[in-house]
Amino acid sequence: MFSYRHAFHAGSHADVLKHTMLIAILRHLTQKDAGLTVIDTHAGAGLYRLDGDYAGTSGEAADGVVKLFAALAPADGAKAAILDVAPLLQDYLEMVAGFNPSGQLKIYPGSPFIVQQLLREEARDKLKLFELHPTDSKALAANIAQLKAGRQVAVARQDGFEGLKAFLPPPSRRALVLIDPSYEIKSDYAKVSACIQDSFQRFSTGTYAVWYPVIPRPEAHELPRRLKTLATQAGKPWLHATLAIGQADDRNIPGEPDRGQGLTASGMFVVNPPHTLKPALQAALPQLLQLLGRGRGKGQIVESGG
Ligand code: SAM
Image (tube, rainbow, N blue to C red; front, side, top):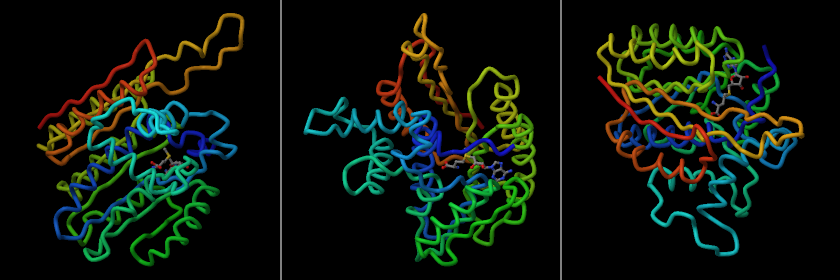
């Protein structure tokens, strides 16, 4: 069960989509004075080295954040590939750059650190983190301890699907829940649907963001459909965005070992999204596709309902 380590995938195109949307949602939710509770049910280790052994093994950041920085913040004063960068992407770039003051891309912030950056002390915003992997939960606790964030951030080595229940509804009555499992075991898909259904009953006005991989597996195909049905039945607005970077031609060279395509597409499904999210994504995703898209199968979708 515990073979998944997010360090292999940190900064991938999937992280770029997920974290760009996460920042956009949080920017909106922190505009109101009232306190916000953010719950990250599958938190990972929090911080990742892009030059470390794990990241180097699969090189997924090379097709994600590294490519984005090379195009939009090129070294040696070269011209950026896009001059009028969409505000959502600009915000994401600035967030990642903030963790790399030397100007070289060495550290990638996971969702816990991205969220923590955007919390407000004066509003008493809170962050609850769940991580079940023994090594990652230790790393997460150690990384978070360095922030000296006190009671603002809590880490639990616990099943996030179960742990979430105790926090809904939050005392603040305002919450963002990020549900970002590794989907290593296919029961994760059903658990996500059950978790959303249960959460609606506990706290239907929260914002829920679910990440999922777009892969040829019936459960993965079914998940966004199921989430649309659940949101519609509950009378809640939803937004669904996908980014597919397509096939890399250089991965399967005749006569050479198949290096595999890795994950080529992913999606985020958001219930009760900020009304600003759809137009902002409609500006940002075509740019992401232009910069990260590789070949056959590339595309992006932004759709909403409710
Ligand atoms: N949310 C993180 C981010 O954006 O930086 C990445 C999370 S990663 C995709 C999924 C994480 O969930 C892994 O670190 C894995 O160890 C952890 N995990 C798997 N099953 C879990 C469960 N039932 N409860 C909590 N964490 C779990």
